[in-house]
Amino acid sequence: MLYNAVSTLGLSKRLQTANTELQLERLRNNDEIASGKHFDVAKALGARTGQAIALRNLYDETDQTLKSTALLQGRLGTMDSALTNILSAGQDVLAAASVGLGQPSPTGSSLQVRARAMLEQVVGMLNASSGNGYLFGGVEVKAAPMRAVQGDESGLPSPIQIVQDTIAAATGGTSSPQTPAETAAAVAALDGLFAAPSAAPLGFEGGFYLGAPSTAPRLSARLDRSTEIPYGIQGNDPAMRDLLQGLYMLASVDTSQLPLDAYKPYMEAAVAKVSGGIEGVRDATAQLGIHRAQLDDIAAMNTTQLRILNDQLDAMESVDPAEASLRMNQLEVQIEATAAATARIARMSLANYL
Image 1 (cartoon, rainbow, N blue to C red):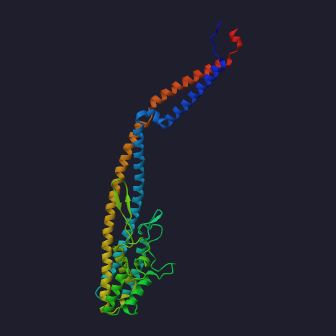
Image 2 (cartoon, helix red, strand yellow):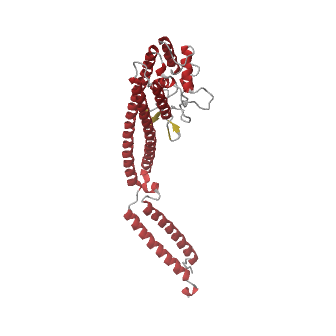
Image 3 (spheres, helix red, strand yellow):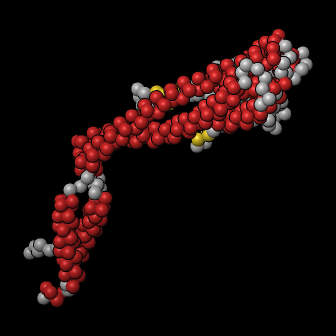
């Protein structure tokens, strides 16, 4: 005679396995309720998984672009502030120098002091930094691009000493020009000194400026596949060199002590350099403002795109709260039933069959 029998031990183990699986499913379902996302997105989306991955990649790329844009906005904002201060300093000296342009003034010594103070301010602004990099040294961002007016520990002559030595060499040894010819020679020598590149042994690049040379690639930022913004304003740009040359000319010589025929051409050359430098810096500031506005537009566009992508991903990856709650209730009922059956089998003994 054959009997169909089921082992209570086997049935108990099967129920325990089923209960474990139900408990795991409840944990996953609880995670979905808490996060609002499918526990296994690929399983939930099926054939649409590829679309979700593409959207996620685009979301990450847009998010990174937005972060890069914010970083660049901070750098350009600091550059704009520095350029504004440089313009203010240059205009202050220009106004003071223009008052006595026609003849030597007793205030010439005070003009020298003011020019020196504004010169140090301009050099300080050109050494501005943002984050971990200096702003006006081009691709050389790890070191300050401008040497201090009074010099440094490099062992080289200070920039103002280089200017004074250049004037003395052009005038035959005097600290300031005494004739129109000496003035012309001094101005020509200074023009050569502040050229980039310079023919002087210790010219502007190396003696005044330590950043990327004028022949190096300019800084630019590629914000997306189609937009690149050049923003590499450098301390050796023509406008900066003109402004610095004019300020160094006024800071190196007490113009109140110059003879009239030497004074006028010297002051005219210095004022022309300061004025031309200010115009160039103003143009650079305006161009920087255009780049900042362009960055604002790109940031606004990426913010909108990020919001749209986020909505699309939420629609694909999010769990219906009502469906998740219903599934949780079903799982709890199943777990309770499985637990009750397991407990009932555990209480069975041979007496149940007699």
